[in-house]
Length: 122
Length: 107
Figure 1: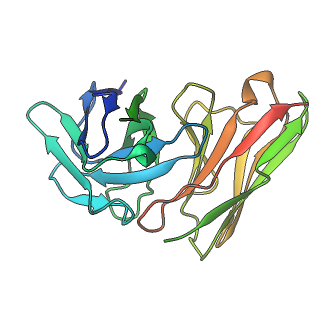
Figure 2: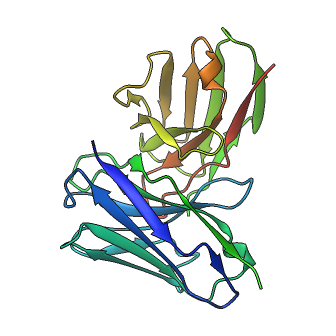
Figure 3: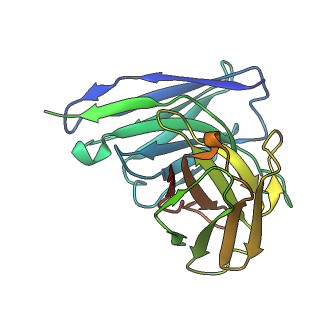
């Protein structure tokens, strides 16, 4: 049973860099889109972006200028960095596994981490 | 970006009711549509992918239908554990946008 364990700093000041990491436990690291989604307090879900095991990325254009995702295949980890954070970046951040990397297959998020609350405040 | 609009935004229903939630895409997405259920304080769970395929382990009272721009999630007979917020997500193109959510509450 694949599980995602995520961690990172929970309290940031404006202009700092948000940094989160997610470990993939109990399953294959290749063949998936490793994804980040966030949810502001009381609001809906926003897809931030994804990365595959080779390091190919796909970011939401609304955040692209500030987002960097990376993978560490030796440890089955993937990470998110979001620069120049503001209060608008305060949210619950989830890592998740996305399927559908093969032609003819469907994309969906079938395994999720528990979430990390990130608060940006001066 | 493809915009996903769910209706209603909230819904009150009783145990045993049949409930339908609608999701509309701003352009055709074929059947590249997923549904998730989120309970308070928890990560979302996948219910349905490819518009109508039930994820393993999801009760058969959940069903999905639609293609193109209009989709529905139906719960045939509401159970107490079904009161939650439901999100659709398109996977036709990037960014993989979500609907704003439908909160299903107990009447």
